[in-house]
Amino acid sequence: MQLKFACTDFLSGYFSTHDRSAKTKAAYTSDLVQFQGFVGAESEFANLDSTTIERFAADLRQNEYSSASIRRKIIVLKVFCGYWLRKGLLTESPFWRVKLSLGRTEQLPRSLTEREMRALLMWAAQSGPTECQNPETTHKERLAFGQYRAARNLALIDILFATGIRVGETSSLNIADFFEAEGMFKIKGKGGRARLAFAVDEKSLQIQKDHLRARIQIDTENSALFLNSSRKRLSTQGIANVVAQLRREAGIERHVTPHMLRHTVATLLLQNGVDIRVVQEFLGHASIATTQRYTHVSKEHLIGVLQKRHPSLNLRSTIPS
Image 1 (cartoon, rainbow, N blue to C red):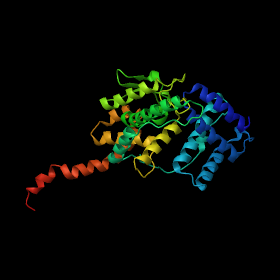
Image 2 (image 1 turned 180 degrees about the horizontal axis):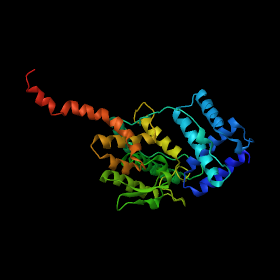
Image 3 (image 1 turned 90 degrees about the vertical axis):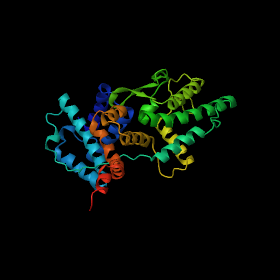
Image 4 (image 1 turned 135 degrees about the vertical axis):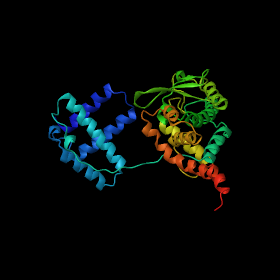
């Protein structure tokens, strides 16, 4: 079988039996297309060997891909080969003889300061309604959506920070996923793992309730909780645009992404003494090793507090030098 057909059949078969997001499938497709471009789409898949994979990794390194990107692309190839090994098209995985040293990269999460987070929330709360510019709607409808958009933008910033959910999880929320009596959201998590997220303070819950009231006034058959100006589901890019706009209006000079709000609340929770297992559950991490990345960020805060509050400071002041 030619490599291009093996890739096509893999993408069709693997993603029909594995609950993965469209974003994950797109990433797999992109990586496999790149591999075909390197090896040759019409080459025989059965001839794939460890040397070819090592040459591909070397080519990526020569083209200055990061270690994290190379590692991800190699993992995609490993899953790809493992799939065909189970199907019997390969009798032996070429990865059994692959020797790669990609190094270890530790990418610390980027988060906002408390001042920046407060400014973002305050600006979202103060921003008034603006008329929607969609030419396909009437003036009355545009005005109504402008009022909805103000409530939506505040609810977006609030939910990303209050619950720490991912931007993709936010985009996929439906009206039915918000249980306002319990202040609870049903989240369709990464890798198909479902969990619950909570608006734990009254202010946050009221923001979400106000948004829901505005949302159900919008005339659309779409079930999405957050809508764009076309009355369709607000995409992850749409959410990123909202965050970017509010960041500029709030006077925050550096680039801010929706994911940074997730990093921010995780970091602040650890700084406030919340157990790491609770933070793991809060973020929906399958492994605590993922959550432990945030301990590197909060370590500086811990040391700073200890340097000011450690009891040894008082004890040593009474001991003659």
